Length: 401
Image 1 (spheres, helix red, strand yellow):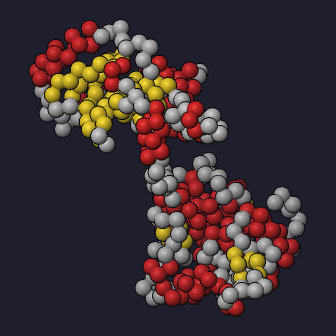
Image 2 (cartoon, rainbow, N blue to C red; image 1 turned 180 degrees about the horizontal axis):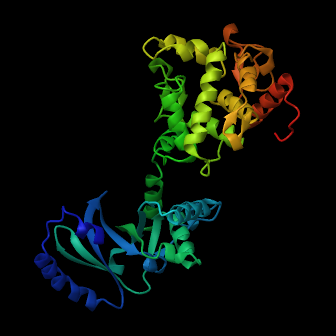
Image 3 (cartoon, one colour; image 1 turned 90 degrees about the vertical axis):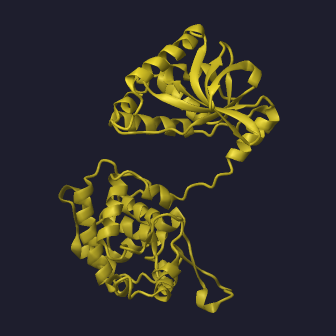
């Protein structure tokens, strides 16, 4: 609470703080041999629930995970552990802590039978929660976070999070089946779209470059969906932040999932902005869209551009990104303009034979004869497309791809 006490919006005087401390301290002294936490009582879903905050040093002692076996849902209160998820959480925390940056883990939900703990209620839901030795809070949601925190605390780098506190929402519920139902209910939330995650990511690496491209490349500016998974053509949107982020990682790392955290955002952005503005202007399939302002570009034109071309689709962008990777010189932050021009001369429409059997599959019996080209978006399709283009362009001297 140090930061809150130093804040100018704290109207509690030192005298009142002293009075409250004198009142509350005897309770902590009484229960000093057990776990005792300030808490809030609230009602939800016909149950009484508590909110407490637990110091890192107490975390593993009072929480218990009960994951089910792989094929027996009744063997535990949680789903089976997801392989690798604990490591992902640990890597996230350590990466942020080592850099001195903020980090956050969501509240853990646990349950316990009401008779196993003591609640000292004062007024308006303010209380102290006493947890006797040996009593465990069974995790309903958050088993991977619990294990990750435990392993971090027990590791050689445990001091990095030793001062952290972790919130727990405690449901006064002892019925095993109801706990399973609670887990199922909490798992109903809709997964966040990758575009939304990219839009709210930190301004560095892949995401930092992405925002500069959206601002400085007319093809992307005001034509990018920043929240949803797909761009609505009727609103004049062609791309999503996720499309562009994956494209950027292909350009600089030949890997759509690389976050590019070690790159110089400004220098890489400037180089790629110039490269793309050259490419989109020189390419026959994009010049009209590139040059038109948003007010002049009609939704019908966007629909045609996306239906007939490849550069309005994520797979098409990734193919372009992997090809631009072959034209980039990291030491000088520059793209080979001649090779970029070569790429611009490629026919990026779906009907060109060069895309057959890689990004495009032709339906021999289409319901609509005008729509016999089916887009293939898998990683293998992109790989095959790049190999085909390299062969056509004669870029075979570098066999690193």
